[in-house]
Length: 428
Image (tube, rainbow, N blue to C red; front, side, top):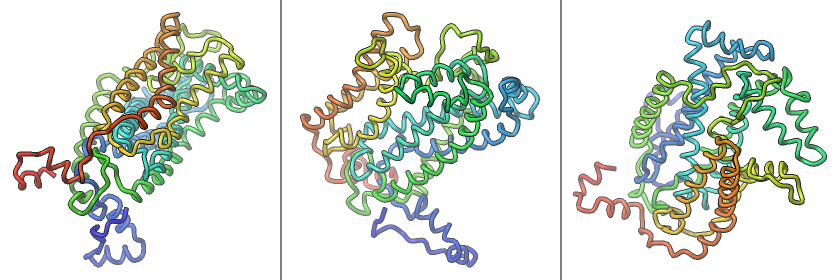
């Protein structure tokens, strides 16, 4: 992000000057998250969730490394090694609960982050690459979370691996080969644990690398803002530090309080009780469900119940992956020149309907597969695809947006109409 009014780093201390000459790390930090990085002055708390996602990833990496020191990748001992971590390792219960609930917090933060991008049009030009890298991170997170859920080797872990990998066998010609390659055999066993543990350990570092690219891509056009209006001049921006470092610090404090409450007061709230039973290939759980953050996609997977040209199972697999891959094409499906839903009333209405639809899919994904829920899931799945492939292109061409402000500063001053200029300056 290159603004002519951006401040340049000039170290005053001799040590910092020497370091900046030999290794310009201070300059990099200053320009990336310091006073040398101007950002729109009207960002709200929804812009905190990128930092929260980074903090959640750091927690996952640190707790995961320590847990890996005590975990045994063997079908006969994995379940008991997790129980040993809980009971015999110093603070092992805390590490395990922080890692398990950290995955849920991470995904929750990323879902809100994606929702903010959808509402404020952060996927539109010139930020298409930022969005594409973000969706790539989301896919990597889903793969990492699935493999991590298998590692405790409880009943839901074992049967989740059995069911989900089983859907790959629906792919013609190569399906069975892919499934055997994923599992390392014909059913989840030692080879599966070794494969999943290795990838589960590796992928967070891959995610961290893609996040660096994500931030790099963001710094080229700069941050979007709630109005969706481009920055017009210095009056539209403030330095990232101290204004947004303070704001992010407050958001991080709230995040950590919620995280701590989850760990200390209800650590098993988001888990499944069957996963405290050791994996038994001869005993199928009455109701196999994935973690809550996979439920909407699991509902789409289950919504195909009849063969039509292709087997129903294959349609389900294609639809599940297609529901995520659709997000990659979003910048070109929405052709409206206006970014923010604040100025697109029709788009905002359908976006709210989409949110309700995703919540319905989440309910269906975790509910019993009776006739009513199957039909509800099929309708919700159909609407999900219709939103992106039919409704969104139509709305982007047909709606009449509200009049945009001429600048970010104008929008801020209108919002604070009646406030003295001095108070307005202090507020921002």
